[in-house]
Length: 73
Image (cartoon, rainbow, N blue to C red; front, side, top):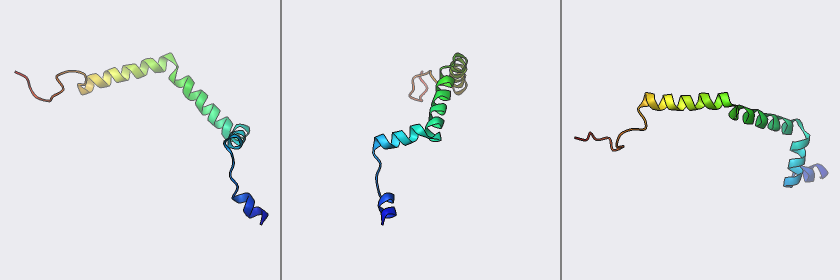
């Protein structure tokens, strides 16, 4: 009966945070967050991303015209 009660208990938010912070999962989440932050705040990455957006807009013809799809006379 004791095992059944233990399996059905619910953990509070504080308990879940304590478990995540103390285990390998919390470390993994923190590492991924740090790496993503480093990647997206890197000036080289930002410049490459901006260049790709501009080139993509030029290649697809985005950003110009009337937007109606009709030829004006």
